[in-house]
Length: 263
Ligand SMILES: Nc1ncnc2c1ncn2[C@@H]1O[C@H](COP(=O)(O)OP(=O)(O)OP(=O)(O)O)[C@@H](O)[C@H]1O
Ligand SMILES: [Mg+2]
Image (cartoon, rainbow, N blue to C red; front, top):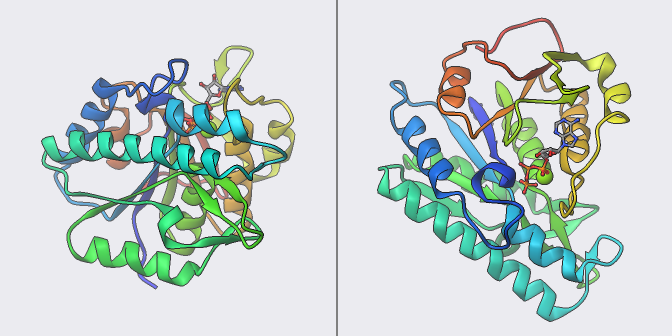
């Protein structure tokens, strides 16, 4: 399987105004597109985007024990994510980025929380890259074998893609500078420290997929599946993404399996 350079999760906390229902953060979406457009050497990148004030806002009205059984709830959550997809697409295209959005709910069902068939999904992403597109996969509401639906978190999709496509790094952009502890950014977390850190980080009101704690769980899984580097950084600050993609150190939380820089 081909290797990709980066999987970048565009956190809903950055690309939407998470406390205002159905509200995009157009300024941030536009600056991300501009930064990606001005990168001098084209990287093989897969984008993943979170539900923010779209997916989370609708899903939490209907969610019971991690599932949505109401057909109305499933359809409304999906519709909200389609609105965010359209917004992201329009802004990226306006900046000359040939974004190719893929909605998981249309490609597969869930088995034990993982997409099936996974091979088809991965092939689609690689074909999109081969066609010169920038694939972007959204967190989504996905049907399962029992004919109910679960929220498939963007964090989970990002971890899965980074693992399966053997990415150099798994990058999580959100609206904070990294993992905070006593109001300070933790610069580095080793693989061994991950379990201890998870118990110190909380979720966030209204986030149905575990907030920052859910993210750390995915990073932990990523490292245990052979991942080398994950960076949790602030996507709302201009230029931080560019620096990371150029291999420069930024204020962020670096989680490494070994002591090694971003290449
Ligand atoms: N210890 C912590 N360090 C950093 N952020 C934290 C911590 N504890 C809680 N948070 C919260 O986690 C939020 C980021 O997680 P959240 O899931 O809301 O963002 P996201 O993943 O970008 O959004 P989405 O799930 O919509 O894609 C931050 O805005 C912050 O308020
Ligand atoms: Mg989240």
